[in-house]
Image (cartoon, rainbow, N blue to C red; front, side, top):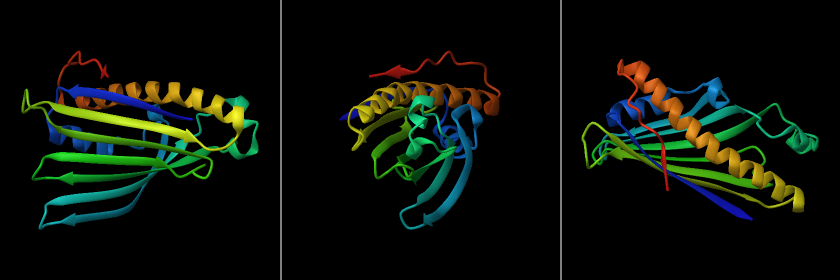
Length: 182
């Protein structure tokens, strides 16, 4: 079974602040990210595109009932993230996927940040992600149901965390910017 979650949001902050906040928000215990390892960085001056490949060490949020299965009983899990910032197009593309348990289930997320057409000082985020559990039969279905709910909640929590960080970094007051979903 495959599920997908889609989130669209407008940050009432400039693109450069949103990108900088995204690239520096980890480690972040509020988002269960304990450590970040930069695996690769490149900058192509000709096309003016920057590239980052990072691995996040995250707290395992699986419910204790699933952790009774030895393969799920890990203290931490690994996620891989790749980011491409096209300075000319003023667009950051982000792709992430699970590394831990990849042979059993594939989870992914793709996001794009770009300047809003409505205001040069706002940033539009489009995000979609999903999961496909390949094994474990009915137990795999239970894991998918849990993770589907967790994915939506975590997406909303990540947006709120980004908002809070940008408010603190910019000295702005709360924008009252609530996540919009589609």
